[in-house]
Amino acid sequence: MKVTSIIVVLGLIWICLIPLPVSSEHMLSLTYISPRPSSHHVSAGTTIAIRQGTHILADSLQPDTFAVHGSVSGQSNGQTLLADDQKTVIFKPGKPFIPGEIVSVQVENHLRTEQGKQISGTSFRFTISTNPIPDRTILGKPWWSEQLPNDPQPTGLLRSYITSPESFGIPDIAITHPAQGTAEGYILLSNIRFSLSPPPIQSTPRYLLILDNTGELVYHKALPRDQFIGDFKKQIVNEKELLSYHVGEFTTVGGTFGMFYVMDETYSIIDTWQAGNGYLADVHDIQLLDNGNALLMIYNLQTTDLSAYGGRSDAQVVDLIVQELDPSKNVIFEWRASDHIPYTDTYAELTNQIVDYIHGNAVEVDVDNNVLLSSRNLCEVTKIDRNTGEVMWRLWGKQNQFTFTNDDGFCIQHDIRRLPNGNITLFDNQNARAVEYQIDEANKTVTRVWEYRDPTINPLVMGNAQRLSNGNTMIGWGSGGTITEVTPDAEIAMQWLLNGEYTYRAFRFTWKGFPTTTPSLTLQEGNDALTLYFSWNGATEITSYHIYGGSKSHQMLLLGTQKKQGFETISTFTELPDDVCYFRIMPIDKDGNNTRYSNTAYRDSNYCNRYSWVNLYIPLVAQK
Image (cartoon, rainbow, N blue to C red; front, side):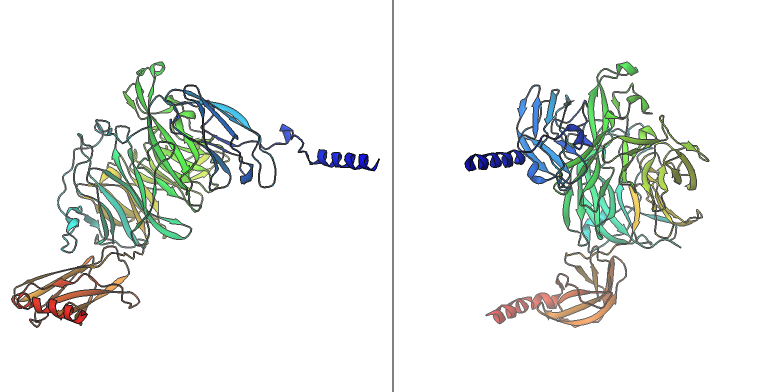
């Protein structure tokens, strides 16, 4: 009996240890599924992502959590992983899907939260685009060929810097209103010059530029001449100041295929961002987030039958995709416009061969962590739920849900931004203005609280409006070729003309640069005088330079100190001993500290040439 009792007790314990099935009504539901169930035009290189919204227990991921089957490719083997946010579970197929096939996904009830709650599985389907994974091919005639004014001719150079030969093509700037009452900081821009025939960008030099209020150069970086350089700006990630910019090839779809680069305060590239799921990043915008993620956009060309709308059966429709990637470059959020926005909502002509029906140009994380999207060809700002991917509201355009109390709306706009006071700013291309709106999202009303117009400028494409720390607004007029900073009272605090060139956006930011490059020193001798030219590209904290010279390259004395004059400082000596043949400079920072020596420059004189063998020989003997 005792043995039987023990067996019974053990049996009861074993039964108690068996996990009871969880009723589906007590399971947590998924809030986000990507690709969106029943969606079309999905990239053949897509990953599959699901999210419930809370942290997932890593041990609950199993090899068979996902069962993925392509109607042509068959069973898909791949990797299941937990993204950096610890909330998104991703299936990465071992190989791309087949264009045009239907993919079926079964998600099992394996996943559990860190609190032990079970997450309900699901099943869904989506259709792969008939197009292959996009490449970097430039596709013929530029999209803007019917829109831009005549190709402007540059009128000159900003400056000619002896210490920086690569700066010869920096565009001329005409200061039409000198800086007075501006906010703190430097001007950041990149220069553009459009062409009206292929190749779409002329082979004129391209630069990232940081300039002071006088137009004087602070930093420049030369980039490929045949590519579009856009969206050069400062971003702050976890209190660290960074610079980001885009380099890409223009295509007929109105965007670029390229890459975003991130530099630190030394101007070293510390990260790059490219779109995931087989796509290529577009030029228009990237937002670097404090959690290490990045939010960017993609232009995706899809062959689409638009005959039901009076269009072509083989139309090429430019879809827009918004992605959020984590630091490991996993796509944890993807939103495709064609899943939510009907083609008929566009102001683009549906009868064209190429229909750029969305043309997103700015993406912004809202104060409630959802996403704001500006779409030029919808004349609309769209708010997107970052958790579910659903559209929350649509502002202006054909499906406007708001009442404008004192404004007639906007169109072909750029650069939607949320302000700390809850208002939004945007650059309204159609009305040649920067505008600020107060938005009541609950009652769906919009009130214009500020604007600045200039009817003399024609900003057909590009542009931005940046609210500054002192309440001023920096306006980049895009193809209007002008940069203006205005006060809250609409008084001009500064204005420049980019004679013959444009900039995609223009910003003002405070910035401290500490380059790791060697300061540059060049010397020229003539007319009984020796002139030294020296600079340190991007060094913002330098106030003066110590000048050293000597008869030997390893033995130099301080000849004098020169106050920094601008990007390039010049010092002239009329009385120097003949045996002073070698020179170098030491930049001194604002606290009086030495930084790093420049290169050593050699004086090409009869005396120095005559005795140069001695100067070379003595150090060698000393080394022995």
